[in-house]
Length: 229
Image: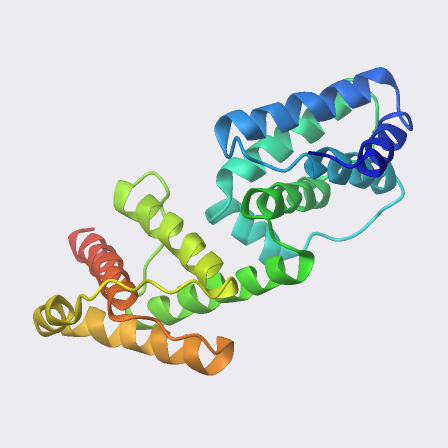
């Protein structure tokens, strides 16, 4: 249930631009609900309207790190954002949108999808990049989203970051199974343990045996891809 103040704020921003502008906002939020998360909060309307209104006076350089994350870990959100900026340009509503704006809009969608504050979103970035770097140090690999196992890895890392931010523990007792697979895949187990130690030190969160085991599985699949290429 929206408060009347929130509805009024949204209406104020929609009225700042031509009708087509407001129509595009509604259209793309509907696409987010259809393709990414049907439970996306209504505040995404407000956030997009506010951003698009003020973006016309923004002339900033692309944040390469955020752009890389969008291109590899948040592809759905980024593709929708690119489509939105492209449609805005084609309708000549705003001539100045660029890759920076598409990247920023994608992050608004990511924040809405995971119900994250700006600070939490930045923490998610750091966690994902940290985990990626640690794995890459152990088994050099490239991200190919078309591979099912890589796509599964990407989804797992995003939701692992979400659980760390929200202090959500995985309580399943898989200690015996974890011990078995650590013996079977020692390199992947070492990498998983490295990630667990890093998360504990830098984010004050303990990764359970089950979390480490799932990481081990994904790391081993990535290692298999590299050895087969």
